[in-house]
Structure formats: C-alpha cells, structure tokens
Length: 238
Image (cartoon, rainbow, N blue to C red; front, side, top):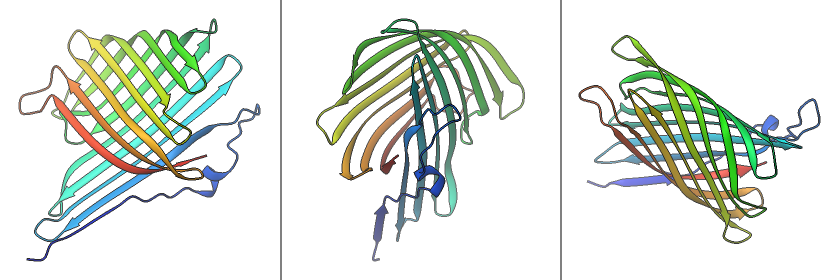
C-alpha cells in the first residue's frame, strides 16, 4: 500500500501580535509565537499540533515573563494526547545579580491522573552569568501547589521550587537554550526540563527544535511517571 507522509511547520501571527506591544507605561513586550503540525496518512493516520508563545517585558529593575503552550495528537482518529500549560514569573532586581522572584503556573494534561495542577511561589534568584549573548540564572522559591484528580478529590501541599534558565548565542543566527524547574513537595515532586536550539531562517523567522520531559514521583496506579516530547516548530519573533 502506498504510504504518504507530510510534515509541515506553520506560523500564524495576528495583527495584534505583530503590532508594537506597548503597555500603558511605555514598556515594550517582546517575544515569539511558534506553531508546528505533523500529519501522516496511509497505513497509519497520525496527526499532531503544537502551539506556544512567550513574552518578556524588561524595564528598569523589573523583568516580567509570560508563556503558554498547547499540544494535541491523534492516531487513527482517536485522541492520544492533549496538554495545556501557562507560566508567569516576575523578577525584581535587588542588585545587579540578585533578584526577588514571584512565579505562578497552571497545567492540564487530559491523559494524566490530574484534571489540572496550579502552583505559586515567591523567593530569590541570582545570575551566575549575565551578558547580552550569554546568561545563566538560578532561583529557589517556597510555594504552594493545588492538584485536582481525574478520579475525584484534590491535594494541597507546600513546595519548594528550584529553577534555572540558560541561554547562549552560538552566533548571530543560532541560539541554545535550557530551562528546568523542580517542585519538591512532601507528597509529590514534579520535574520539568527543556533543551533546544533556534536557527534564524529569515528576518524574525526561525526554526526551533526542542526536547522536553516531565516527571512526577507520585502518580496513581496505571499512570506513567515520565512524559517526553520532541518538537520541531517555526518561530516568529516580534
């Protein structure tokens, strides 16, 4: 049987996204939107879609970050994956290399044991490297996590959130990035990590390859502890 495979990465940016994203105090929001789509038909019908956006606002002593992403996959017409994530954090510099960090997160995975999970934290961070083209930061924040279970019931626990962000410009067109956060709780420890690379294709347009993992130490029976995802998307920066 003839089998065809089509893999495309597409990008759609609205007029609002392309506009100058300026807040009421004159600070400009910068960031990017990425989209990717894979379709295979023939002996196997498989589809997957990923979308995400990241925004950053840096002004005087403040740095605000907001990110969101969604992932969907199906096989033979049956949904096999559906995930949504939102993250936000704010850094307020105390010195040139030390800052107060506040962060919040929400995630929903329709194929996990949880209906959704939310977390909040407030702590301190420090830049080990702080250059225009090379940066590394670490942070630690005590916080709280709320989990709603698909089978019913919920769980609340105090957590400690450990995080790092790394970025290195290999050259003018290629950048390596890595992020990780570990939310340590009495009942459950959640680790999220990502590594990837972006390469400029044209002005404001880049190819992005990434690999992410999520691990939870305590999940109900019949649920896997580890999720892994490899992505290839087109990134539009503005």
